[in-house]
Length: 353
Image (cartoon, rainbow, N blue to C red; front, side, top):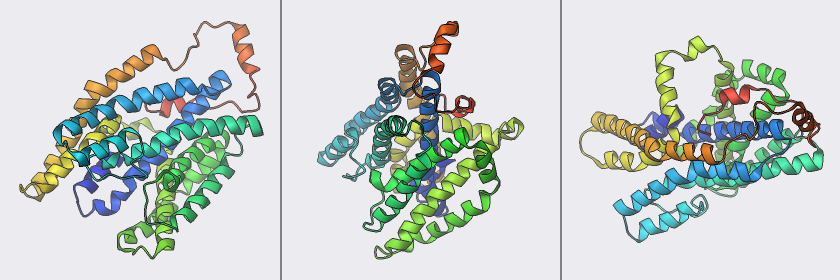
């Protein structure tokens, strides 16, 4: 649903001017939730975080589709302006130094890449310093306050230090699932109404002048909390008969290819925004072409690169037939103070992650 919101926003549909603001934020919160789950699973299996394996697997996921898209945009829309965007997009600096081109939307990937570098290092630091990850809620609270204060000083919204609270909302919720499942269940029962209430300030965000920095900060923080509530609600609906209905199956299929769709929707939405075929036709063609192009490029670039990744850098080097001595050794790992993690991380994580 998040990728549908983003496409609708970029097609300038009035209703998505409100809903579309949630799109990227949902991506960030969900990304924090899933990436934290992968790191927790690494701790469970190996007693530590394998930085090289994590970063290499992330690179295989992100870089081939991104660089294929950058190359295509360079060939299609060459020029000094495009070259500027290429350099900033390829170096993941678009969030701090935006270049207004068909590559502008890759600012969100710049934020994600910094998060991939930052989060595992933070986990290792907490393990060595505190011998556990139970300081994560306090880290999350500190980040939430810091980003709120940072946003008071600027009208920008893309830089990493202004969006890291979105990502860490997902990390905090993953922590609750793993360490405080009872509290997470209680939170799920109360999340719908607060989620709607925290979304309300965003309805006026477009009309807020730059001088209304406090209201803008409240609106961005409200969207952050709202997206967290949405994730909690979705995670709690584990009734397979509910999710197996046709509309959800279609959305899930779109979501499976969401990364490539996100990359390739920009040139198509830009083109149909400028076309003169009429609003209904341009919207229909914009949605269809964005989704179909993303699925096609995922099958051409993204999925083959993931297959190579899993062949060359498998997620787990353990074998099912490992000896009892190996199991005992793993139980005596330095992170013994960390409670056993639930296995639902495996069930929930995107198979492409």
